[in-house]
Image 1 (tube, rainbow, N blue to C red):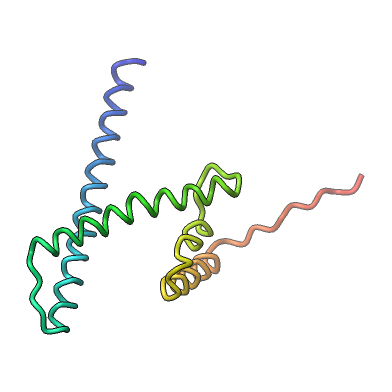
Image 2 (tube, rainbow, N blue to C red):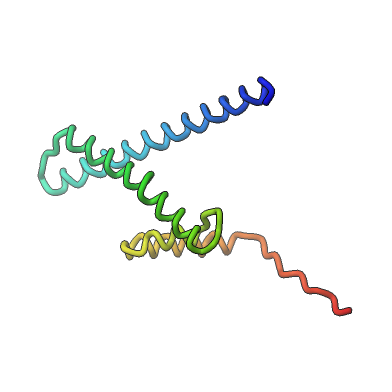
Length: 123
């Protein structure tokens, strides 16, 4: 592999890692904000270390367990890539999330351009 290709690969990996880090940080900040808001609603105080632990656990669950599950669903269906149905299936234990994902999927399908199946011409 030429040196230029290696540099491009390393650059792309660096960008991917930066994007992953940004998503992780945003996710954690969201979890922290939600945790603090819920504690406030309940009239409780929550230690920063507990909030940090909750955010780490939530991220690890989402990034590792959920990603693994959707990959297994796709594999079970005989596909190499994950599609929306795999994501929807992963939410089967959370009815509210399941409804939101189905609605979102339906909305996306409504926005897709209509491509009809090509019919074979009779001989």
